Image 1 (cartoon, rainbow, N blue to C red):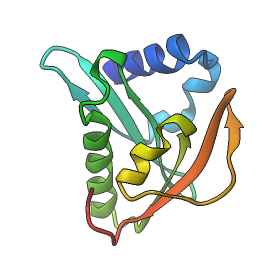
Image 2 (cartoon, rainbow, N blue to C red):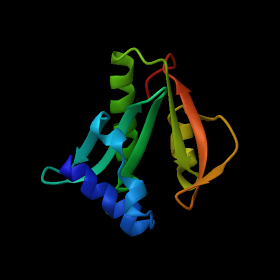
Image 3 (spheres, one colour):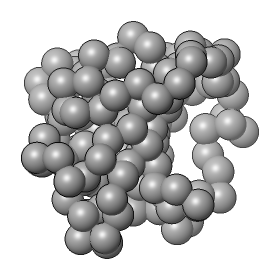
Image 4 (cartoon, rainbow, N blue to C red):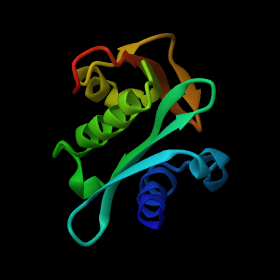
Length: 133
């Protein structure tokens, strides 16, 4: 968990200016966390929470490791775990600048955009009876 939190700190708090009290929450304790590493350290992370609905969140990849397919691998790992848990649909709040990433992996916009932690987002979801990404 320490490596995942370090990546989230770098991406959300340092890079994007999200207040620390908004980045970490109680959902971390019960979430399924996945990480991607370079052999020595964590370079990407994401989590799956289940509080009424199954939601992917806190997807973060360090700047030097972006555009290498890491986020897609993190999504695939969480989707696989969700299927194993019998989850039929996943939702997420995508920052608008990475919306196309989620669309490439089968997610579709489900409502109007909104601002969360000072950042433009759009709600998205994916049915898991679709082919794996």
